Length: 474
Image 1 (tube, rainbow, N blue to C red):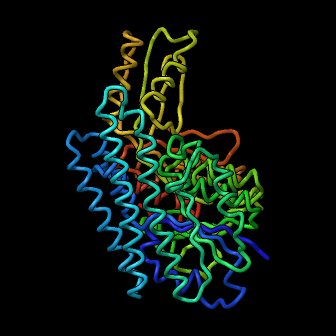
Image 2 (cartoon, rainbow, N blue to C red):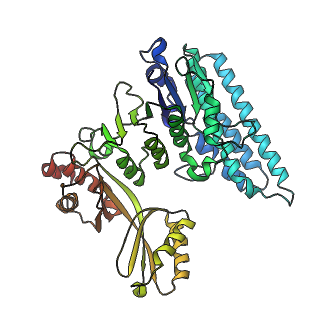
Image 3 (cartoon, helix red, strand yellow):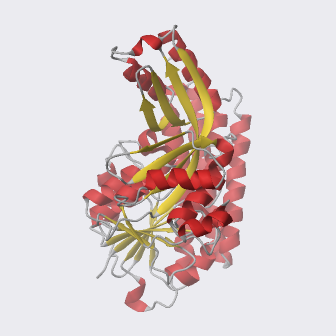
């Protein structure tokens, strides 16, 4: 039996009824339905309500609980989550009995969480206890609610359609806890037979390591990858709402963008560095070390094989992708830096303390520049810390963009030279450019408003028909 472990993201989960008829079942019958383990995320928007909005930062239950004196704000937010969960499963379930069971599940989990938070708030009203010491556990508790709900609803939907689906809850609800991630997964899967049943597994797993501590909202991919490694999957599959393409089709055009089809984990790491959500780099590491290939598909095109990611080398040098990211350049200039050690390590310490993600860096005799992914508000705090450390230095931040040309093997393609020429011929200017000796990516630094036109110009040069496409790109 071929065994796959497959992950479905939150946006796709909101179209669960469509996936039932295509991805989960489609034309499969009998034994062909099985040999597949599904790891599911919460329905779209639910985790935003439980924690905070991923893009806007608007407070969810977690943030309101952390900042609440009276408790009324988080109580209302938790009730909003319950209503949103009910709306999500009402949209995909059509049998009254299934809807009743789903509502009962939501009521049990939401009210159980509410009682837990009330008890904790009451306990921490005594001086011997500090709420701040429990905030990570609270974040874990709340996160697990969304995945448990979506996995339970998916199981109901599939069972109603005649599939022998099984709800596998890794969220640690009302159990003793304190076990490792591997033990959590192996214990839950111990008596599961993927050859005759379809496990529907929660993307969140409660464990002693605390997934939120290191991965925060990337935890579902960590659960997915570890599960694939532990069961010895022949392949791990991530179902998204789009294909991995040479560039954003909305930016370069549907006809110009090309599905990658086949690439390797090195390219996947470069994509993660540029903020693209192919797979969390720690999850990719787990799969790579377990020798499990990864496939990324479009969930709503089940007959398309998507893109395979493995450790294989490129058959020939080629550019595979052009992508970009808004960044902030943190520059520290110090005339007395020449020959003095320690400047860079101090900067790294400050960036780590403020949880700033570094994309790339360059330096010369008296200047160190870090290109980072952070808000200007955070960077102002970083600047103040550095100014205290180096009172004679000139420290500043500047909003820019980075466009990266990526491929498994760029040797002999003159990407740096041709890229600068293509940018110039499109009427733009690069402020900086860099290429490492491994030849897997070339980075171009630009003014922020040039990110999209430069992606078009570089995609035309390297992916489309070369210089004949530059006029369209410009």
